[in-house]
Structure formats: structure tokens, C-alpha cells
Image 1 (cartoon, rainbow, N blue to C red):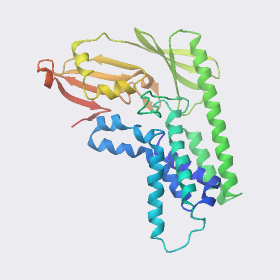
Image 2: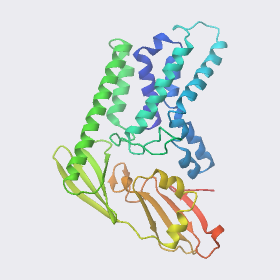
Image 3: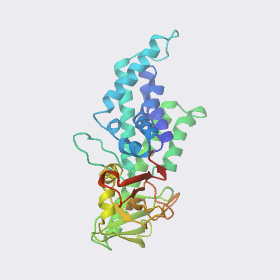
Image 4: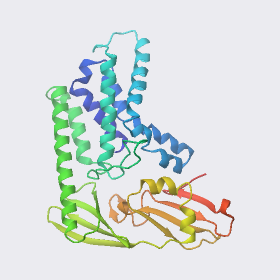
Length: 326
């Protein structure tokens, strides 16, 4: 999910009662709910290291206990330099527990979208994704705001926070049900493995990919009407020398490890004699507003191969999402 949703979720969780039992709970849980995304700092060294390490160890069941400990220690450090007493009691073990809950909320929210995460890494490198909530869910965002702002006008903080969380759970249940229904509708037209991704606004519209050995068939499923409309059909290209070279590049290893539906295609030779090889994921193709992928698919990469060079210098340039790896 995007950062603001994570932070608001942590703050809302704190207001269910955690903030009464431990000082600093609201601030700590709001920070903890976004802390796993500290791995995005890897992108400062380039798009490929950023992609390789994103949703890595900080997004795992192994990592979050240490993150909770570091954050609790940071607030303990701040507290020792504080002169004024806190309203809530100082309870470091409970604050650790609260930050752990907020950190786990980050993992859960990231699991709900189609990018996924590896919660059991490094023991199990498999990616898991629920794919039933878009990376930015407007209804979820509104419910978070209501839960946090409504107490200013009516009712108690804890009551609104709990009510908002219950409404969010109901939303997740509804989206999960519609995701399952979309797969059921699509399964009536093909025996191929299916992947369904949500629309950011319409909860009844789902973007489905049927994965076959020869091609990926995109379609749009409407769970309200029970209909499926076929879309793009993307043929899978046969391996070439250029694609085999590109698959040994620093971009290919993390990309193929992450991608559930990878498409690797060779393009036309550029004026400077390089052969571009594109890496795309079929889940992010087609027309998915606001990420209309027909111009350039999100989360796509390109490796420029110099077939005339020796083996050690064949990778001339790499790009990910339009950013060049320096």
C-alpha cells in the first residue's frame, strides 16, 4: 500500500486503546506502520537495488521483531530526555507489543495487493499476494480518515477507531469475496491458471490474466453482471541469444524472482547497435486506470544487450520504470 494509508492505519490502531496503556503508543504505532518501507532507501543507489531489496527482510516475520525493538529503544531514548510527565503510563513491554502489531499491519496491507511480499524470507523465498485490494484503496482511505477525525465532532476516540476498523474488515471481506467470484467467472471460459487484480475504484471490475504456455490472455470481469470481456492477447516470445544474455543481468534475477507472470521480449536494434530486451509482468498490462499500461507497463524493465561485445561486456545498459541504473 502507499505510505499514507500505512501511517493512518497505525494511528487508528493506536486509538483502539493502545494509547491509553502505553505512553508514545500513537506516535510509535504510526511510525511502525510505515517503518518496513525504510528499505526504499536502497533506491538511492539506483532503481535495480531499490527493486531488489524492496519488501525484503524488513517485510518479514523475522525482521519485524527487531524493528519493534529498535523503535521501542528509540522512544525510550527520547523519554529519558523528556522533562514533562506523560499522560499515559510508561510501559515499555506493552509499547513493544503495540509497535509489533503496527508492523504486522504493514505486512498484512502489503499482502492484500498484487505486488505481494515474502513474509517467510529468508527461509522461504516465495512471494505471497492477496490481490484483492488496489495499492491505493479510496474507500479504505476514507474509513481511516473518518475513524481518526470523527471524534472531534461526535463520540469517543476509541469507539470511532473500533467502528472504523470493523468497517475496514468488512471492506476486506467484500473485496476478497469479489476477487474469488471474478476468478470463478473467468474460469468458465478457460482452464488456464488465472490471476485477478482489482480496479482502484470499481469494486466489481477485475482485470484477469489467463496464463497459458503460449500466451497470456487479458480480460475484464464484472462480478456484478457476471460477464467477462476479452482484452489483449500477448504471445510469449521464444528465447533468443539476446533474451538469454539479458536473463543473466543484475536486473533479471530479482525481476524473475518477483514476477508471477513474466514476459521477456526482444525489441528492434537501436541506432547505436544495442538490442533491447524488455521485462514485463502480465498482471500490470492492459488498461488499468490510473496505471494505463498501454504506453509503458508499470514495473517494467529493459536490458540493452551488445551482442557484438565479449561475454563480460554484453550488458550495455539497464533501465527500470524509465530510470537508468548508473
